[in-house]
Image 1 (spheres, rainbow, N blue to C red):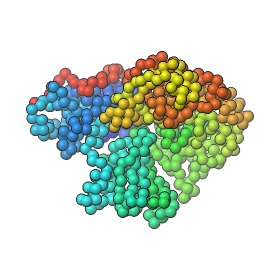
Image 2 (spheres, rainbow, N blue to C red):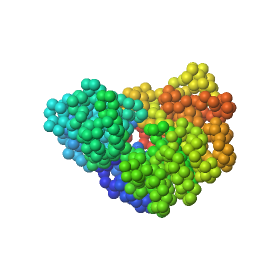
Image 3 (cartoon, rainbow, N blue to C red):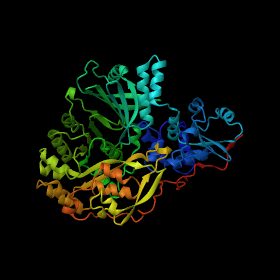
Image 4 (cartoon, rainbow, N blue to C red):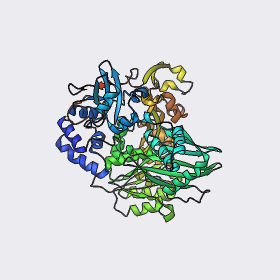
Length: 603
């Protein structure tokens, strides 16, 4: 979600009303939303589809009578960015965007600041200077080109700084936030410490630290996380609240002893997740409708299954956003609390004080809740309390470790949950995985024979109707750091617990029997949902195979999958803009600079 606007909320409200994107009546709920979540009104308008990012940038640019430079879709190269010295660029938040026969385009997110203009004119004395507007996060994404490698910065800090350890840690944390890493790994080896970032689900080496500095780094992290610095043989877990340019970021710390020293893994709990809605996470329209219907029921249980790091918490919090309003009491118990939301009561599990999931859940049901989120059902006691809470007038959401949606029911029954209670309370089961998105900026199509696909996908002809299939991949570009991927998308498998499945639960069924009925009622496997996203150009076929596999028993036990490729699967998809409300409904065009009629040129 957009952060760090240099333009105040009140000014943005005026711009959107003047452009007829919102009405004055829309301001009150937007301000309440922003106040309750300690965020900007901009987030409300984006989350609720009043406007998208391109239209927001275009609206602000037009207000200031400037062009709109869409850096996200048309990023300048490293060499172009570096044509403006780092000190000038960072101090004034300006970026060299492009150069053409008319002159040089400089982009900024602070259009009221013109102090930099004379300095830039001296850099390019023979060219006309044009000013354009870009969104803050796009300006920030280009500032990365001024950062030297971690290895170079480590050497410079060691040589010049008196505060070596704090500066090294800050550089690592700052880089992780800039590159949108979900995890930071400090991995001690015999002579050095390897630092790696997990970006879009894949680990990348970030730098190496001389081993002699690692003990002090380890101790500083332990002190900041309030852990025992003299304990080197136990696993320890805690958290740190890290301040970055006035923005607070929660870091979850895990320390584990290895043969070469204590390994640190830091989970970065970025606030961007708060901007996610059910529209953003990859749900089909039908699946979204099923989830929204279940979430509006006054009681029942909704389960989300999948491995660690598959986006379960993001999905559950997206559901809470649908439910969140001042008229209901939402309480969560988590280990740890990953995303803090001001309007929700959140409880942190603490085994040292005896506050476990089961004990905390017993207390929560006496706190007059309407909706309860349990971070994870780990044991029989928690499962039984959760089921009883759902039976006695509460809507309960939780995660559960199972390989697929159908397996969750036999596992809960094996844990000792009474079949008649489970049948009475369970509403839906969601299984999910995360796959990397193809970069939209460099996405290209190609054709593949179904016979070739059969080598890696058994019974591929049941998933791909035609003999020749149009698929997509990312070629690699500046926008995605030459990887071909940018961001991630979830693939889903959803079972709605109907009367027929309720009756089956009473018979202590196998997962195969449950899935057979779910299949007849329209459920799609993880792989089938992934195939649809492959055919529409959202992800690659090899990426799908990395996170999900075609069910081996599918054809043998359940017959041919009922999947039908989209009619437009042979064409390259076009980006669409979701808007509602009023004003200009068209998305901003994808030309590098959208030049307005006046105010472009300054001499």
